[in-house]
Length: 495
Image: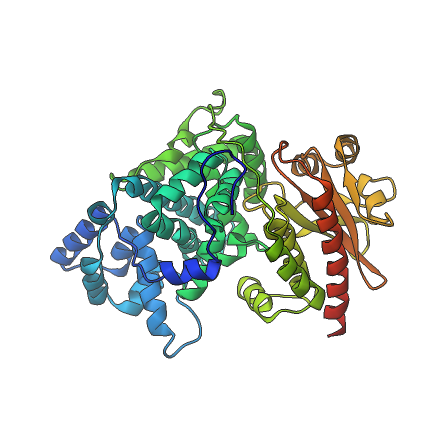
């Protein structure tokens, strides 16, 4: 796959399965500080599970290695997985953990210079995300905050594995995407043919790591209140260098405030208190890119790195394959993936997931969202999305579909529509603030989706940024996907 950048690009992208098979063979190197700390505990001879867990929560690679080992053993006699660092240590036993840690290579001793900086930065973001997510889970009286914190560490497994294996490609993706998380994800897709979210999800499944993180790594269904906090904490950590007054930060802060039940200024102080705790706990060898969250909220927004111009290139072969599966309405592999990520999977979920993948992976559309109509038909909510990982506008968004609303017309339009700048502005005027921020693109596609005689909702897709213009060929692809989706939904209903 090639990027439209004018610069030299990587060779053909590997399939996700190829990446997973290659990377799962490699054991992640841990921090040198983790080995020294465990050696000191062993010498003291009075270490407990909490002491070792405290070290592992500072070192995502160590936590992932221990969870992988514990769940391989657990698989022999139990179906459930070890879901937290503490459980993994208890499962393995302190003596075995000490032996394992002594045998792990260290990042500082094995990684080349071009890999080490990215590897340590990834560890730092995961560590900070885990501390924030645990604090938020405790505030919301989560039944197992340690599972949420562990999921925050596990979510970076794809990034760590790729920094270890192909650091130059990861550097290229970072330079291409700039500072904003969503642009970085699309840049990873351009350079590597897979996002780190998809890769992490594949490694989680293959290596039997905790499954909670799957709900937001590839968030097909916009559900899961526990992983909402996890996604927001990760997004916040990545935006830490931009300053509180940057637009992206203001948007995510609004959602964090709502999630925590706080006013924005109170939420900022709560976040900053947790950052101070992270500063004390963070190993000296890790950088602190999230330290900017300590700055004065009234300070001007920091300067961002915009990255380079690029667009996702359509992949017709993938589009055709996904379209065929979508029409069938049922696909065992897609169903299995959805059941791993979500407690409840409905008949419409498989064709919907395939349709969104066809739009994003096949036709090169940046974002694909299905807005589901409520039972009383008064509003739509984002039900399934792709290309919106970590987007702060999706959670709790309710868009009115009453006769005077902007969406009413499109729900009852006889055919899919291509909205230009004028139509997009008219649509945004009738939406609440979060809706306007979500539908900010210069143009987009919209289609009402039916299953038989029943109106289900709206299919939305766009292409970002503005210079990646929509064209007639892409609209033809969108029309084909909308038609295939309705056929697939009908087939799923019959089966």
